[in-house]
Image 1 (spheres, helix red, strand yellow):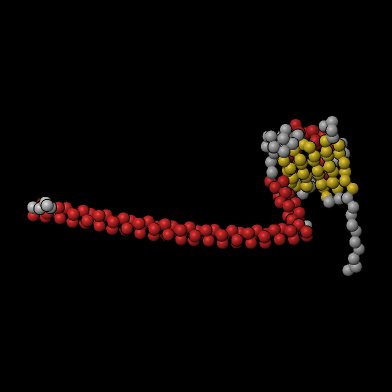
Image 2 (image 1 turned 90 degrees about the vertical axis):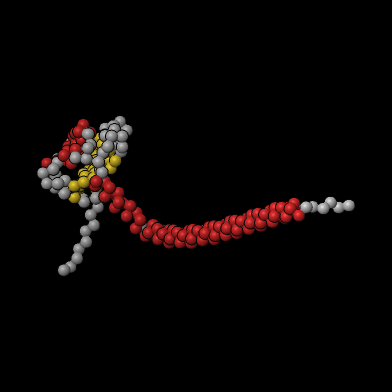
Length: 203
């Protein structure tokens, strides 16, 4: 014999079942909405990543193309000697501005200015006084600095300790003196013999 449920109990049980279904239905809807949002977010992120990867790839292709073109130009410059000439010109500009600093070797160069001696020119580039006097004393045995004129060119290789390893003095393209230190630390002065190419033209 089946038990009979009172009407009140049946109604209460029915309402609870409806609430539970509503809750599950609402919860399922929330889960679906959240899932859709996550999927869209991930898909959107993938699209952004793909776009970024595409942009990076294009930038790399352009950079590689520019690099290849630069290498071709550099190769042509090396073959024609332009690169060496540019390098020498750059070194010359650096030497014209350079100054000696303790602990650093440097190449300095310049031209004598009006009322400027070689001594003052080297002092103006921070070369130690003792090193200047030593190299100039060695040169004076072969070259009289009273013959110096504004515009004379000079170049010095100065070691880390401030000593002058090599000094070049040029009064003209044909008159050049070079002073170098030997293995014993003594200076040897040499006057370069410059071949002059003489060409005769009729006017």
